[in-house]
Length: 356
Length: 259
Image 1 (cartoon, each protein chain N blue to C red):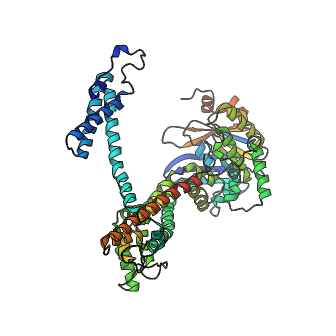
Image 2: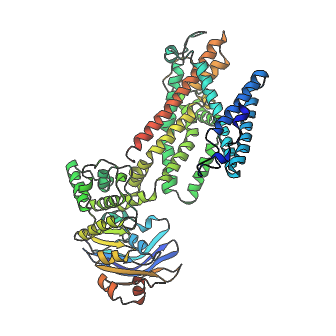
Image 3: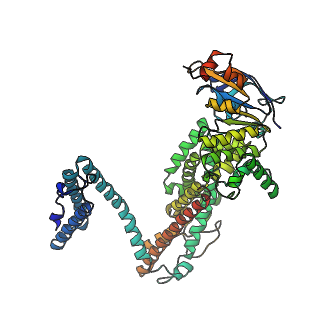
């Protein structure tokens, strides 16, 4: 079956002049199916590596399809077919780790992802049971505080860069923002720790310190995304507003920011999603605890990444309960980020409701 | 409350480049003044200097006097924002605010200027402005729809309604019909004719028939060559400009024998 399907169709039988010189629609899928069948048969007969077989299959489809297409359709279409195969494989390759990650986290995490996990802390828990309630609260509080600090700074900075900044200062700010984008998160944590250690001594650990460290990471992301969104606002709208006798500051607030609101909200949410999983800075400045601490300004505060880290590295005896909790915490973080993305979409839809 | 504008020795610059040189012009109240001339001769630049929109562009500056009823618009203590409340503007391409409804677009001038107004008063203002722009009958049932849902000609009339809602004394129009079809153009021209009883109107146009149809006085701008500043060549009653201009260049331009 595999060899017969790839024979090019007889050109003389083609009636319609517009479809002449084209491979019939069923040919490319047939080639793919044929190669898969061959691969499957080979895999059953001989013991071959799955990844290797997949790689061979992709190369095989690319080759056969190109050659067949070149015979029937000419060089130009053949190139098109080849590039289609390459682009599709690249897409699948990029998607594979994501899908694999999602499946692994869900598979391992779903077992302990229950009511107890979401509502209990780890206070006095050794071995079975326990939960990450304190870590969830900690993550939400620290991230919310980080957003409260960095969103106003970031948006105002972007407004300065787009609407007011001219010359040297603006270029310097742009450069600094670019540099800040590349700051390793551990450095942000050390910065926050060093700063608060000056005032509170070297044993300082509290949630707001973690929030400060996260905002160091978040500000440049917010600046960048807001800047792009503000640049997208057409100049005509600014002029329309000026021509109505509206001052520049009011134009920026009521027209420019309002028009860019959907994009800025999306950017902010993605920035939040970006820092919510940060581990290193929180390890240094927020610390870890087993009990619920909802006070950002007092005492150690656990968070989901830290909880995951410690549950996995110090699982206790027997280890499987700790490891299960680590996976469940990872899944929780995953779900939170997913929800954030949905919120971003909802916000963006809400703000752009009037535009179409 | 139309007002008279007297321009004397006005030079307009982009950075160090002089775009328009020594314009002297009187713009009569309750009349339509048309500005014609080839592309790049500084008509739009000149128009934008009449409500200080020119200086919005970085590096742009103006020298000379623009006097509106005895007040120099470029006086040292004059707030450009206040000037623009008295001299409204309609742009070449319709530019309604995309995030606002038709109603909010018309109310924008008042609202953005922080003027709090009672709902009933605002309703009245929106209706009278839309009626003034000949748009009320077409949109009265969908005031809550976004401004961008209208057709191009309707959007331009919405922009005119928005401009007249702040009750300016002068209305500047920068090629308001160049993006519109003949029917919408006709609607706008009729509107200009009606509006001149309340406003002083200055319109820049590339369409000479339009200038001849709508304006009472016409100014012809020209430029000697690239890199040279544009100048006001001649200004007179529209009928005279189009029938018997005193400068040869004007006649050449109007009859299409230009260049």
